[in-house]
Length: 226
Length: 183
Image 1 (cartoon, one colour):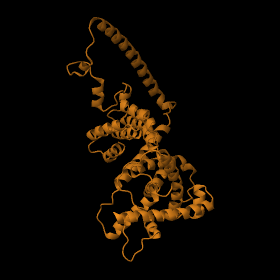
Image 2 (tube, rainbow over the protein chains, first blue to last red):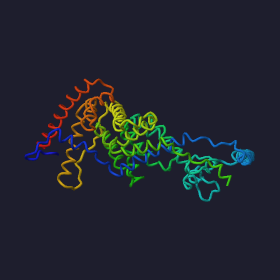
Image 3 (tube, rainbow over the protein chains, first blue to last red):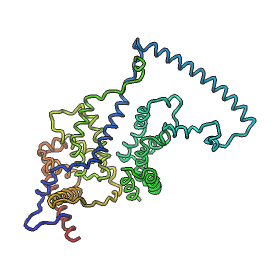
Image 4 (cartoon, chains in turn cyan, yellow):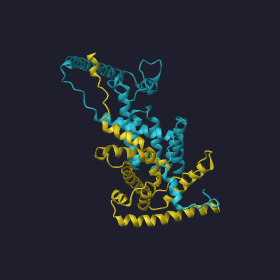
């Protein structure tokens, strides 16, 4: 606290004079804010990116070949699906269904999709077509899904944030923005007055991301709202 | 190499976006401080700064580069902070404990940091409409006519808010100092 020095008057004018000098934001905070701004621009670029032109003469043969491959793939897929469906129908009438836990069993020839997706670092519901999608596109997609949650939380519309958070958690459980998503979840729950859930989410966040730079803020929010 | 054309090229960033980001980066310290001066809780400032950037990007094509940028940024910050404050008016504020800057330093630096903290704390006790006028005129040194035009209020209102705001700020500072002396 400021105390008056002997012989000096701490008047309003001199105080305002000192506050006129703009204090520099700490580098870590500055970096975070600039990254977020950059991310917003990238997300917008993704939104406004024009669709690739297909009428160029040089591309026609490739487009034609790609179309043929797609058609062949679709036909093959349909045939395979039909065969598998019939086989499954026969099997289910004869043999009781295997427990779900056995899907992840190493001895089982059936690979648990979730485990595979986690291993590959891909979103859990990525379809076979999307698994070949470049990672950059997935990141943009992640950002696109989560951005409404961040905007809603910033605006204090916490209820509105819950849907994109849930969608991101469903589609990108282990995604690159999982840390940001869980921090937003704590904030949104705290904002909605769901203190107990916020506290639990904050505890889960702390154990999952023990070195997160967002940890102090998350802890502060959950404890302040209790 | 023509097959590579099947892969869409990453879109190039427009010059308007680049200019907007440059301006934002250049004035980031000012924007951050302005939100604090307008009474935004430190834990919320980063979110509001991001919101300001989104608004700035949307309005950037309307911005006249001949005009000074800071008052323009202040106008956006003021509207965002006011709207944020209205939403949070019925909520209990976060129990953020304000601690003095623990970094060691010469007495005058420490004294200066404390003076700034004192001004921020006192400003919080001035109602937002008068606080905005005070910050713009006394800290950003915008002329009275400029304040009137920026906040879309009559000149007379600026003078009266300024007079009353100064009085409230002065009282708030004395109150805080007395509390400190007593503690």
